[in-house]
Length: 159
Image (cartoon, rainbow, N blue to C red; front, top):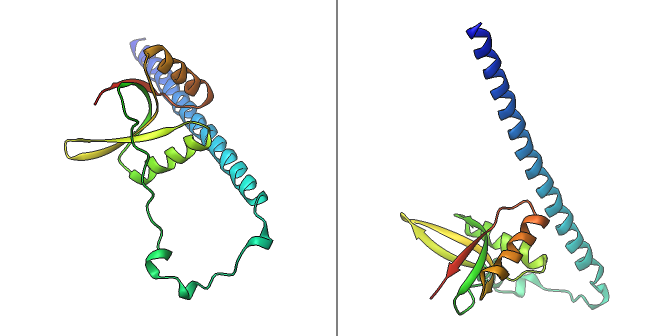
């Protein structure tokens, strides 16, 4: 009888773990779909506004090589002053942080990046807004939670 209860308990625990894993995968898939839809809308808007009659022929051979190589754009830095901010991500990869800044900028927010080194590892913290009150930051946090499948948090920053 104990063996049967043990087997039943293991089966229930296993099914719960599998269902939680599937929900996380589904949430990640949905977020990726939303991001793909947003980026396709931006591409469509950009391509619709291009006037091909205004495009000039560019002689690539005449352009110096340093101008052809892609440059890394400077990430937006923290606004001056003290207050509360909403952090949406912290990542080791600077390119991914730049991607998130672009995503949240396209969504109508004003993100910025602050960097911190922990145990020799550099982290890029993607944050949105600088607010005087915790309540203002809380409103943005709730908005981001409702619109997107992220778990932002509020941080107090001072110079």
